[in-house]
Image (cartoon, rainbow, N blue to C red; front, side, top):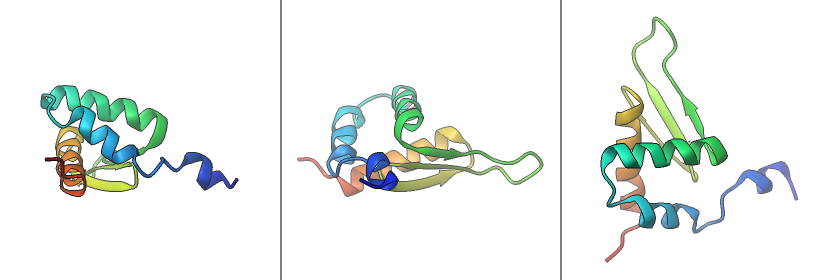
Length: 86
């Protein structure tokens, strides 16, 4: 097994995350994304003196925003579009 195989989420991990957190309040979803990032993702915050920018890479999906909350909202919206539920 390669290093990438050991850190790559299972294919259904994104769908499972979306199913669990899509209906939660934005602050609760942000906390869930923070928790998942600690174990499976990458977050890139703005450098001092630069234009505000925040990027989240989680479950193979990347989204960005002006700050952490906007990036999390954009990430969840993209994840929901990729994992539609009836």
